[in-house]
Image 1 (tube, rainbow, N blue to C red):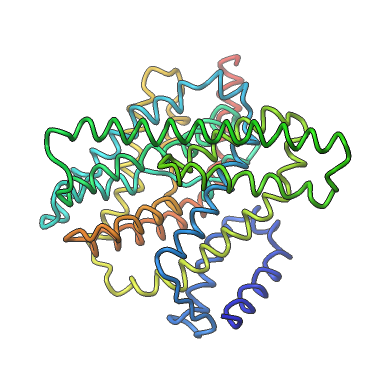
Image 2 (image 1 turned 180 degrees about the horizontal axis):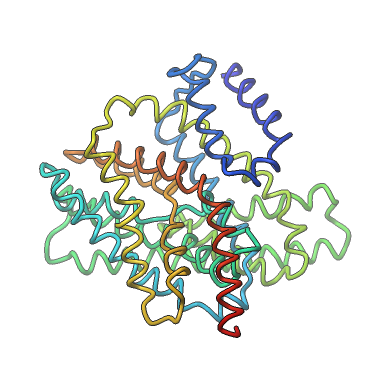
Length: 405
């Protein structure tokens, strides 16, 4: 354990020295983290010997996602999001179901032995986008604000929306419910996940923020401890919602939105320490993924799995989003940009862990598809984030100038 800790700590120390340079390049942090995990893990030189069970891996991924969602939501420009809420709303309500349906259709000829319900579960697992991997785009000020905030809102909410859908498909595939109760089960799960998650996130954040302000005004909080509340509040929103059978992802995102609204101009200063913690957790998650997951799955990759993963990142994601945004007035460049940057990452890994405990007949195929898709997404979305963002920003600037916007 201490050897693993020493290796990861030294790597984090070295990486921190050139993290800013990495952010400006085409090679992102997650690419470096996964590569290091592969190099240092059993498939490489064997410096890392990580034997995490699924529960431990899920905890790391969940905490990372919760913190990233809270921070991204806190930094959101609410005025912009309100003005252009129709974009993420269409992507979630129209694009998300179409993505799942198209994912099933693409899976039928590639995996003829896998049942339709299992393909439904797989498509749902890969429909959720990752806020952590999308950071390079949503924090790039060169990208128009409406595009950044739309992608931020989509990634913040679709994880929570996909959870009840995934649980429904798993229940159907496992034969754990009767046919007459399918609709009722789906609606109940959806209402519980969204409702409880939103209430917990808003309630805890509202009370927590008021308490922090009260204590700060009386000089009861030191500058050092002022760095702690955002981190633990994000974890509290997530964990409380999960324990009450709600969506921890929605709780973290809604809590972050309220925190940013209440903190106003002080938001950036208050979440700065939390951003550092989120980066460290993300690094740990991706190094672990590279060392303990990718290497074990490498030999099981077939051409069908690779092709489905490629389709999932392109046609299955992009076509539904472009169709969903018809009639919004957005130029084709915006639709394609929004459609392309739907990275798959930690949320899909968490869903894979949930599926692993369901013991489906074709569990192995499903899990290997998720590992392949996430790995490809880290690579292709990471490499294209900065170049495409710069090109898109320049093109949209010319478009807005020509149209007088």
